[in-house]
Image (cartoon, rainbow, N blue to C red; front, side, top):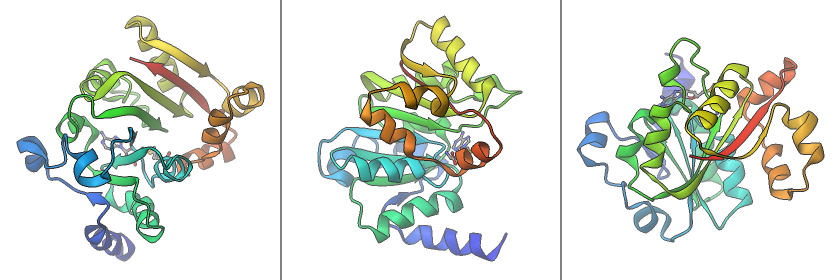
Amino acid sequence: MGKDKLKRFAEVETFHNVFQPSMEEAKAGFKMKGNWHNDYFKNNNPIVLELGCGRGEYTVGMAKMYPEKNFIGIDIKGSRLWRGAKTGVEDGMKNMAFVRSKIDFIECLFAKDEVSEIWLTFSDPQPKRPRKRLTSRLFIERYKNIMKPNGIINLKTDSDLLFEFTLEQIEEYKYKKLLSSWDVYGELVPNTEDEDLKRLMEIKTFYEQKWLEEGKKIKFVKFIP
Ligand SMILES: C[S@@+](CC[C@H](N)C(=O)[O-])C[C@H]1O[C@@H](n2cnc3c(N)ncnc32)[C@H](O)[C@@H]1O
């Protein structure tokens, strides 16, 4: 392992805004489950998750835009979420946290109705393992167990495969589609009057920048499962 990665792992351990429950700890009853509002955020504001957050560009960007909401980025890679967490520490951001965990155990991290909204940003398309896709029925059922009624899921992706699959899931399971576009920057942003949406689309993640440089079209869908 590189020196930088080791340094980041060590530093992440010292951040007050990062939680790293072991699988055993999560399964036995993670201390934050059901207690995020009271014990960490100290308010009752809505909690928004970014799943597979990588460096946490959406978590940080949205937390700065919406101080009246709370944001939690989740990823299995500690050396990636180190970036977002460090910004949170340096900038004294109180409405933001990170969890290093597999998303598969999301129900061990949050209680029923604890989460208001979910963002999936450039999730792995998992071409050979549809059940592992973060918008598969399996994952959506997990999200429904922690989200408030009418909680919203947002997917921003470069992947035609994942986007098409998600649209099919929405159709098949009769989720409520609120908005969708095959071309965020060519079609959605120029034509919308929704200022919030425009601001949100201004946030670009590490992977998004990479795909944009390669000329890929970015897709977006927002739905209620
Ligand atoms: C393609 S990257 C996107 C990262 C970031 N959202 C971006 O756009 O730059 C996908 C991320 O999801 C994380 N990931 C994929 N499957 C996961 C899972 N089941 N549990 C936790 N993290 C996962 C990976 O570690 C990786 O950081």
